[in-house]
Image (cartoon, rainbow, N blue to C red; front, top):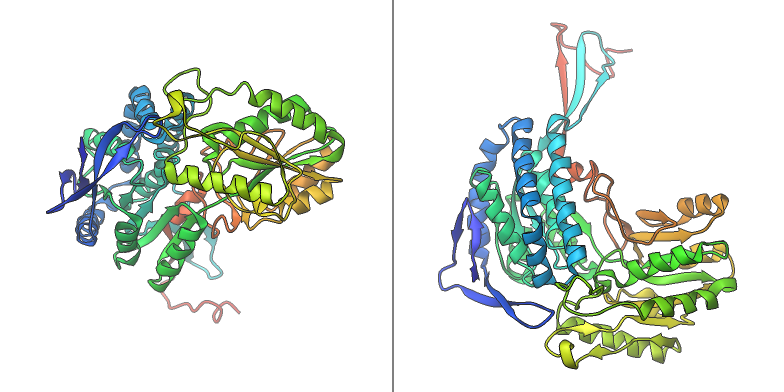
Length: 492
């Protein structure tokens, strides 16, 4: 199977195209070959998208929304197929893949509802016989750069608000996980989305991503990925005066206070730390635990970790699938050495799985460190794998300080039965998302998603806030006085 670009409603191949192989991280099986596109392919896609957008912007928003309703309906019909494909190319267990597809379905219906809102505001004018209002206007052509860990959900967070707002888009999926983009293109075709509204250009970040950021007719870049790459996207986009929306890394923590429901906390930590093999930007990689319950928490975590089954995510009994590739294994392994050199105590895991059923895939044991120093590399740097660090504290104030010490600010959590501690924590934790008596994962599509500091640059995916990325505010004044009225001068 060869995946070609989807541009202006048709499948197109670069002349003298080169391809790279898409592998199943669970067993090394070749799933497809995906085209590595050129700067010229991006330019062609933008040309078609720009032409299409002029007509698409004139389609009433409720009619644009009708396409999203149909897209959501088809995604719902194909939910199991999409989930199976997602697990094969990304590796996450089938239960999680179904959840990700459901998130995309929810986003389709949610954003379709915005077709009858796209709310602006009317306000009183300071002058007589004058009307004042603001409305949302489409930006034009937008560029979407999405990661491999959520190859469907994150794409829907970006593309669906872009569609309903009247934009057209160029989408560059990760080369590791292009098959979900192919599946979505088939759905776009089937619902009859007008040619040029949705365009998919496969290829590397260095070539295709850079060409998108530098193209003068792409006015918005919405990027999800590493903080290092996001910084480059912001710098390049800034030189071209683009609006750049960044959702990047995380070093998320669960705080467990001495009065916490320990069983619930352990359940939330296990799911947050080891779900998706730790490959979530919201994954819990730090547990900040009160000294009075540290030993009890350690023991329960170790007991629960022994129940985690590892293997191919298509097996319904498996709880942890592979990491994405060999490079990820090397990075995770390197952090195990870092942690040991820093003096942290390795309680469980810490090894690549290579024998038997794991021989052809990329598997890493769920790993637990304790006695981790709050300012160590293990506690400060994003690992993006199933590695959890326990940090002991004496008080809630110290826990909040430790949580806020990292350069990221995506998600945080606190387990406590004390309402006063809960309200203090939700106020003082400096992350874009805060959970109470739950883990660090589980965002819902109708609230903004994103973070502070090294996690983002102020914009948000999901929720109504996503529309702010893909629209411009236009203020409109209608003077029906029949005379020239000068604001701030004639209102004295």
